[in-house]
Each structure stands twice: as structure tokens, then as C-alpha cells.
Amino acid sequence: MKLIFASHNAHKASEIQSILPSWIEIKTLSDLNYLEEIPENEATIEGNSQFKARFVQDKFEQNCFADDTGLEILALDKRPGVHSARYAGEQRDSNDNMNKVLMELEGNSDRSAQFKTVITLFWEGVEHQFEGIVKGHIASVKTGTEGFGYDPIFIPEGESRSFAEMTLSEKNKFSHRARAIEKLISFFNTLPSH
Image 1: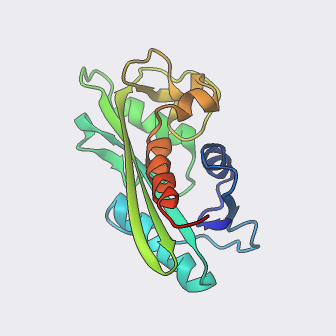
Image 2: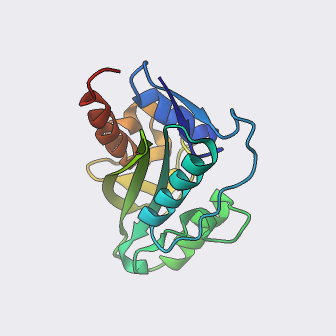
């Protein structure tokens, strides 16, 4: 079964594909030769996820899903949140974003944070949403080279390593995206036949 993923992000796509059962094959917008960026102007993570999924559903009229993820840091009033990808500017540079967060948290003893992913699925024209959250804290320095985004500064609860120090399969055991995708898979497993 093919499912369109409303994204150009190859890192994200391979992370998601590694969690999905083999009978679900995801196609990114790049695979469909659709190279334009979908706007992300909504005020919430849920809204961005929904907007992207609706945009692709309207354009391709096929089963599709979108995700939006934000890093919510308690001491920063849940920033960067919905603005996580562009926190340090439109260049969407992960290092700039991490540097901004580390600078804003300097001297702050409360470094608690959570990653939240919301997936919006359009299946046979009906919309569904699934949420995944992982709690943790922000490290004082970047560590590790795996993953992407804020992974080098996020240490999940019960771990001493950042997401970027883990292999993909280790990260998938408890990542926010994996938790949302597990709910997506549960939904597919309830369908009469796949």
C-alpha cells in the first residue's frame, strides 16, 4: 500500500519508513516530483500538520499523511514549539536553532522539555490525528552525530545520551514520532484488510 507523506524531508521519511510495517510504502513529495514547499503558517503544531495533509489531499486526491513536530521548552514558555524549524531564521539551520536555544537557556536550571509530534492522516477522504510526546531535558552542549534537528541537545527521560548519540532503532524505541506512528499503525491494523 502506498501512502503519500506530505514532506520533502528524506531523513524524516526514512525514520518513519523504518517504523512502519513493510506493507506500507511511503512516497515523499520529492518522489512525486512536487518540489514546492508547503506553507507552515498555522499557530499550532496540530494546525500545521492538518494544513499540510489537507493541502496534499486536495492536490493529489490520494491517501496521505503529514506530521509536524515541535520542541517545547518549559523555561521558554514552550518555545520554539510550532516555530522549531525556523527558530533562528528562515534558513532553517539546525545548528543555528540549537545555538539559539542553548544561549536562551544559559544559567537556567530548569531545562525540562518535550518533543511533540502530531500526524494528520487522510484515509479514504476522512481525517484522523495522532499525537506522540516524549519528555526529557535540554543538554548544555551538543553531543552525537545521528538524527537531525534538535537531536544533539535533547536527552529523553531515563537516558544519559542525546537522541543524536543513539542509533535509529534505539531512538525509535521511545521517540515522539515513533509514538505517533504507532498510533497510526494501530489505526491501519483496525481496517478490514490491508
